[in-house]
Length: 150
Image (cartoon, rainbow, N blue to C red; front, side, top):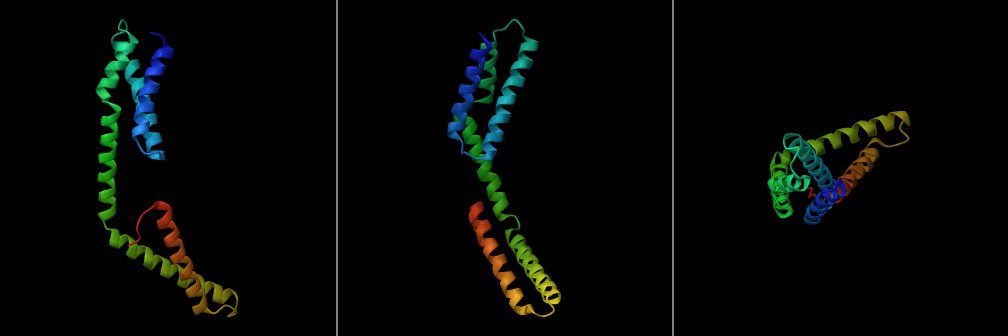
């Protein structure tokens, strides 16, 4: 079987798998790794069994990996598992630290602005403005990442 036919089999497998996975950077990485793994496995099997047909060796590798549906199912399980641990591990502590850090930065920045402008900018007004920006940034970041801030 020709190299083009082997490439077509592998590309078809990757495309079928890609259709079942979400369209994001992690999926692109997974598909790239999957493709590299298939080619590495094929090269290894060809070294061990050089007289064997490449098509048979590719099919062995694909069977060992599982169907695209099985890969998508495992990927989904892993995503849910990692999201659950991320969401619940010290979430309150993370947000509390972010809030305290934003407050400290706002106070320091307001103090510096007040000193640099020799009192032209009111310290308390600067604190309020900077805290407002911090809150807006918090909401924008939550919207971009799709996570709840509470």
